[in-house]
Length: 222
Image (cartoon, rainbow, N blue to C red; front, side):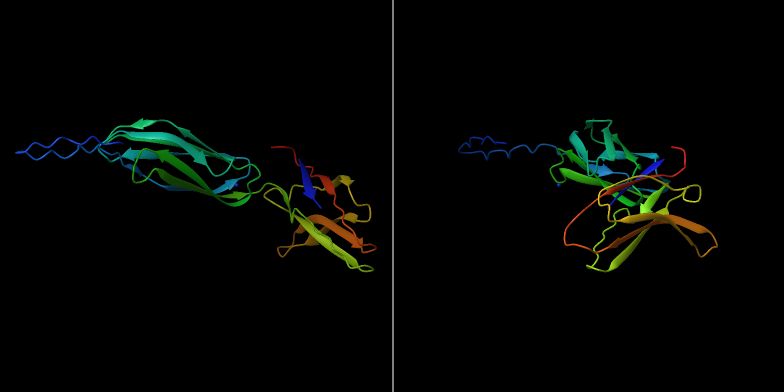
């Protein structure tokens, strides 16, 4: 495994006779969209898993429910509409898949369901998951801003489920050559050790620079 670190109707009126009142215009039977469950929590998951859940859609109205489309708030989430039309009293399905790759931490994603329900044309569903990262550097973005003539030191530490199995090795650095980068380690509270990186720079001039660092972790790709 290799880790990288970086340095938006018309209505027709009825004629009225002299002796009879005109009948009222017929009202179309409306559908009503409802869900057995509007939010699903996958709980804890491991990065790389694809999590799938099927939401049940019910039509408790008196007219056919027509689902135009479903959209998601993130490209990591896909929603497949199994039934575009749900008859009164019937039930349909929306299958939602969440790709946890590079989605470490708490996740909340929204699925929007657009239909012909006049009272709820844009209904929303939600999925949640707490994704445990396999390997990552925290922080993944290091900002160095030293005063001229003074040295600044920053550190970034390895986190994730496989951090104990990793053995870091610097493969490539690009960017500002004024920055010194070295492997680092420190003891943890439970007596173990934590691997990471230490960045050092001494302010010599006013300006701006950036760079990237590529590491080898020693952990086979899963």
